Amino acid sequence: MTTDEVALPDLDPVIHAPARLRLMASLAALDDGDRIAFPRLQALQDLTAGNLGAHLRKLEDAGYVAVEKTHRGRTPATYVSLTRRGRQALEDHTAALRALLAPVTARASRSQAQEG
Image 1 (cartoon, rainbow, N blue to C red):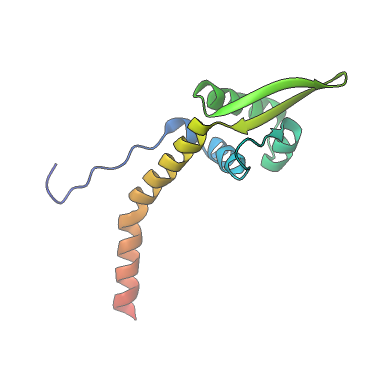
Image 2: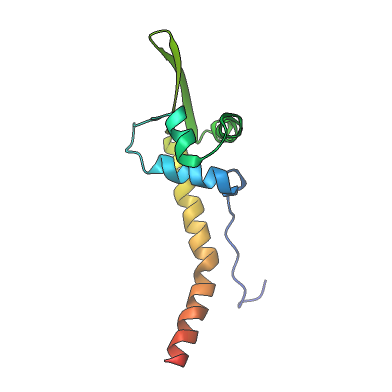
């Protein structure tokens, strides 16, 4: 690597998939300790139950989300929340995206300044 080259940040492949990135962003909007019901999350994300379940499994395997299965009376209920590890992973991923895009933003700003 030359002195002009900058090491590119690592993007988290678990989070980087578009549906999982949207899921993580939605869950990060919740306050710490809050959770959302599976059907509500499914409606917000406009995903099928199977697709949402598959993405949540990947996020759960990485330790980024917690999935709690319980019952409300006799009816099964599933709740999803972001873990501390997941919140940190999303922050790290966001920082990596910003670092990756910083040169593009800087070039666009210089270009606009030269045009103005």
